[in-house]
Length: 440
Image (tube, rainbow, N blue to C red):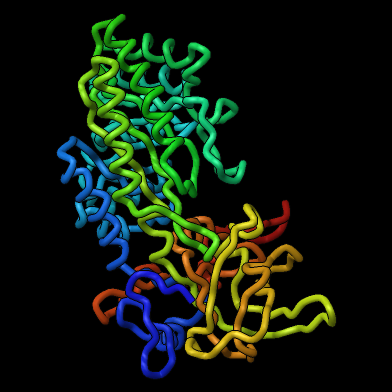
C-alpha cells in the first residue's frame, strides 16, 4: 500500500497522519472526517516556489482554492507565500475574512456578477482574470464609474486538449471558458482592453485541463500564447508581462497514476518559455501557475466507519460506509478512482475485494468499485486516500446528510478547523410555509 506524505503505521497497527493516530481522530471527531496532512501541503508549496527561485525567473504560485476553500487552508497558504486563485464572491469573501494579502488574490470565473466585480474593486485585489466580452463591458463601466484601476489578464483557449476526462478538460476550442486564440476573439479582447484608461492588461492566462501527467501540452500552450504576446508587441507596441499557464498537474490516486514531481513540470515550463521568448524576440515574462489538486489532493484523507456488508453471490461484496457521494461526488461524476485501507487494521493483509458503497439513496453511490481489504466488519475505520481536492468543496446535503468535520494534523498535533454540520444547521435558513389565512 502506498502511503502519502507523513502517513505511517504505528505500533498499534493504526494509520497515522501528521504523527496523529487516525483511529483516535475518528473517535474524537466522528466520521466521516476529512484529515489534512498540512506538512505535505507545505512541502508541495515550497517545492513549486523553490524551483522558480532556482531558475531565477519572476513567478507567482497561486493556490487554486476551488480544490478546497476555507479560512484555515487560506491562512496556511498565506504563511507559505502563495498567491490565491478564487472563482466566486464566496471564495473571495472567505479569503478576505482569513486576512489574505489582497494584492495576491486573483479572481477567476466565466460569469462574474456585478456584485462580485464590485467586491473585487472594493477590496483592491491583485487582478481579475477576464473570461468574456460581457465581463469586459462590466469591468470598463465599473472602473470608469469608480475612477479606479484594475489589473487584468485575458483568459484564452489555445486549442490544446490535455488527455483527461472530458468534463475536466477546459483548454480545447469547445469550452465555456475564455477567448478563443484561433478565431480572432483574443485579438478583439486585446483591442478592447489594452489601451483602456483604467484597465491594466498585464498578460494572458490559460488552463488546459486537469490530472495531467506530462509536460507536452503545457509546452505547446506556452509557445502559442507567447507568439500571440509577441505579435501584440510588434503590432501595437504593447508588452504583456505575465504568462499564466494555469494548473492541472496530476497526483497519484491509484497505482495506475504516475505524476511528475513539481520541479519537473516547472522546469519544463520555464525552459519552453525562455526558448519561445528568445525565438520571438520577446522579453521573458513573469510565469504564474495555479496548482490546486497537486498542492492539496493527496494531503487529504477521508475516514469512514463501516456499517453493513452484503454478499451478492458470484457478483460482488459490498461494504457500506457512513458517507459517500454527499462528501465525495467525484466517483459518480467522473468515474474517479481511489485507494484505501482499514485505518484500524492497517498492517493486515488484504484478502477480499469489496465495493465500497455510500449511504445515499442512489445506486451509483459507490466510492470504490474494487477495494482490496481484509475481511471487513462493522465498526472498522476505512481510510480513503487523496480526497483533499474536490471532496469537501463539492460536498452537499443530499438526503439531508450533514457535511463532515475537517481536521488539520501536523507535527503530532491536530486541530479542528471546520465543525461538523448539525441537523439544526440544515434548517437554519428555512422560513417554512404558511397557508394563506392561517393564524401565525
